[in-house]
Amino acid sequence: MSTSIDIKSLSRFETVEDGRSFGMLAEDVSGRSVRLTFPTDVLSSLVMTLPQMSTAAIQRYRNNPSARVVYPLAESRTELSTDLSTRILTLKTPDGFTVSFAVSDD
Image 1 (cartoon, rainbow, N blue to C red):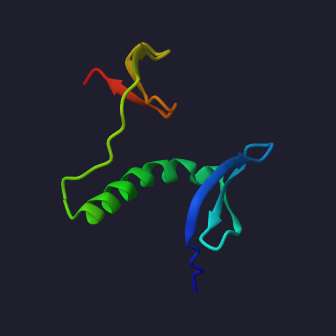
Image 2 (cartoon, one colour; image 1 turned 90 degrees about the horizontal axis):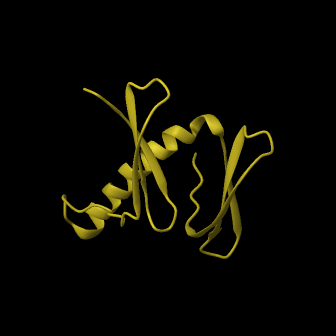
């Protein structure tokens, strides 16, 4: 059996001192504080899942299969990796969200 919690807002995140887990703190619709704790090992799958979740939600909300979440770009940077065979493309939004991609010569 699963528990359903209706989240009103996200408050902040925290990591434990040794970095083995992180928590997302939120407030539910009744005003109670809620903490979701994850092992750091799931962070990559969470990061990869959130864009798919947001796209699916906005497409249903707008009843438009081509709708998507679009962020303004404040900065982009390309640099060589230490092995000199891969370029790293880094994109940054005005609010500080940053994502980097490995780009091979292929």
